[in-house]
Length: 453
Ligand SMILES: [Zn+2]
Image 1 (cartoon, rainbow, N blue to C red):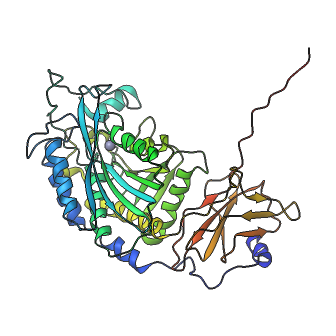
Image 2 (image 1 turned 90 degrees about the vertical axis):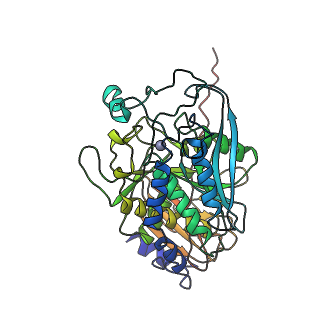
Image 3 (image 1 turned 60 degrees about the vertical axis):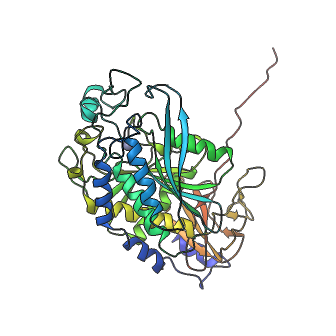
């Protein structure tokens, strides 16, 4: 009803551009290119290293984190000459759960795009096993922090106790590597530069992700999205509930934060290209009192979300029982496909429109009548149309959308900007749609009052 009224009044509504049912056949092909056999082979290989603990051996060719990171590097180098594969190395001093000074290496594969803006797909390849695993931790503490780590008697010695970590986070690592393979071989000319990142030292406090994000921030690198996949390979909850048809996506608020817009984008485009798999959005940074690498990126100001399997089996996390037989390859494959759909779309789409003034104010008003929604934006290069989104101010999901032409503003008569949240996305000639840029009210300065005695 409201939409009909708006349609009648809006000028510049575009009829010529791709309608929302249109999908890019190249992305459909890419979604279909995820190989279950490849995912399984990567997981078995990762398991074969025995442990990938950040503090484990680096001098064995077959056992420990040194062998594992070298294999991941070599494997990704073999995928395509277009992929720039390197170690991203740091020296971490002894602190907290890092029990001795240690050199750590993220393994990074970059697929350069037409522009320098980046989209990350990631997991962490390091592992940990604690006494009793995550389940005893949950049972004892209720929420699962402050685990006892099995340590060698000599703190300077490698920690080589078994920690297979096939799900945590071999699953996210395998997904990341498989996407590196299919994206780099796709022949698609992406606008964004894609980074396939296998992080290290997650289990000691998100160190690998944090140090990389810190470097990216210092170098003023534009990162449009980080997809962090961590524990995405098991569809059987430890309580017996099975769900192989959905994935959870966690994002840091508030409700129209950049990370929340990424989460909505993943749900929208996952549903288009992988309708058989549901994306369950979670309005919190991560699972209760638990964390992951996307949080490190959030802390440095980058939009980032966490993918998590829908039903966890805690008896197989941070435990010697986190082995290949706890993995559902069809489920991991579906989760990989959702990542493909969202990452490819965001990397092909124009950048999101800028909806704020140089001073930071939202370019929205009640003009001309004082009771209208008057939206303006700065055009995105490559866009030929824009899609306006809005929803009730009390509600998380976009409820209405409207495609308009290649304009830099629109008036939606009679829609009170006090009652709805608005946003706008840029659309290119092939129908690729950017992340939604929301109009967010400015924070009001705290009230101050000088009084006279
Ligand atoms: Zn993990």
